[in-house]
Amino acid sequence: MGNVFVLDHPLIQHKLTYIRDKRTGTKEFRELVDEVAMLMAFEITRNLPVQEIDTETPVTTATTKVLAGKKIGLVPILRAGLGMVDGMLDLIPAAKVGHVGLYRDPETLTPHEYYIKLPSDIDERELIVIDPMLATGGSAKDAIASLKKRGAKNIRLMCLIAAPEGVEVIKEAHPDVDIYLAALDEKLDEKGYIIPGLGDAGDRLFGTK
Ligand SMILES: O=P(O)(O)OC[C@H]1O[C@H](OP(=O)(O)OP(=O)(O)O)[C@H](O)[C@@H]1O
Ligand SMILES: O=c1cc[nH]c(=O)[nH]1
Ligand SMILES: [Mg+2]
Image (cartoon, rainbow, N blue to C red; front, top):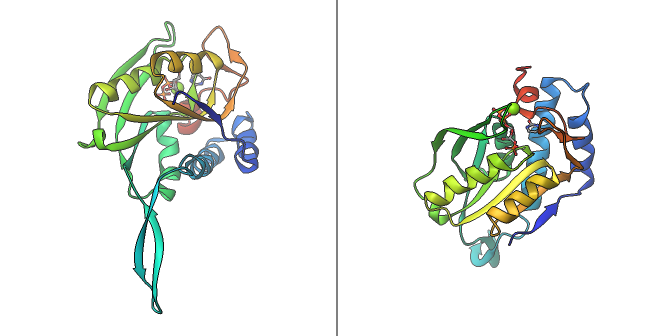
């Protein structure tokens, strides 16, 4: 655990280029984030355990595989994490979805939690915390701590883009959490934005700039 995986599938990388492009408008941005989230869900679920069962096909009995082990829970960090939920649910339709609302104070960069609603059985689920951006790492760090406080034991973090600073914060605070990214960028600027990044993910998703 505590590993960092950059999902470098060509389709993910291609779409991420257009997500970063400042000329990409809200509609296309939303669609691309949705598509990349689905592709990342495909990669992140690659190592889920399976078990063999007997299945009656119309002609014989076959030994086949089904998912085994823990069920999945998705936990988007509001707002921007919402943009990745539907794409992931396309692949994992039975997942339950919890929500953690956090905003980052633009001056101090400190995260503030304003909402939390989780499935009652989070302690039995493999949770995937979702947020497009891991910048200073403060928001994801607090969101994960909130989940642990409420009993979560198996948590992974999935982001589109991270800054090295944010990755270090999560590794330090939550060494049990694996991190899945589409890209690990260069650095943060003085306002806490990821460079080169994609700008403000929430504003670009919801057209609020
Ligand atoms: O790693 P950090 O430095 O904490 O920054 C990352 C956070 O900032 C953004 O949310 P924001 O506060 O803009 O809220 P929003 O999703 O409502 O726009 C982003 O979606 C992360 O949650
Ligand atoms: O670059 C960044 C950093 C934090 N939040 C964003 O939406 N973008
Ligand atoms: Mg924002």
